[in-house]
Image 1: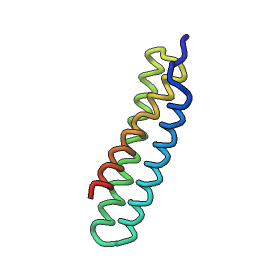
Image 2 (image 1 turned 60 degrees about the horizontal axis):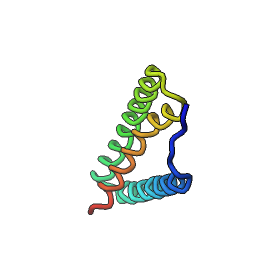
Image 3 (image 1 turned 90 degrees about the horizontal axis):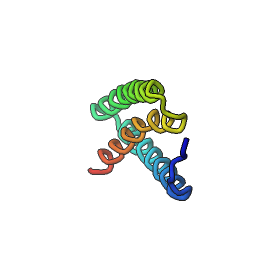
Length: 97
């Protein structure tokens, strides 16, 4: 089976970008929650429901990748994709004002 042709530096850049977005989302969410009030309650509930949904989507994606006979790297990528999408969407939402 052929390995993906992505350059190692590109993969490293993607990992750094994801880590930065995760840290930013965590910090922005903590600021909203620490402010208190109804916005904090909404953000807390959103955070919990998004995590449950991301876990579910990840398991389904990994299961489908396994069932289709894809390799371990493809399964891992499929399982990770829902988390990436959720973090990217939250980063965009929390930094847009």
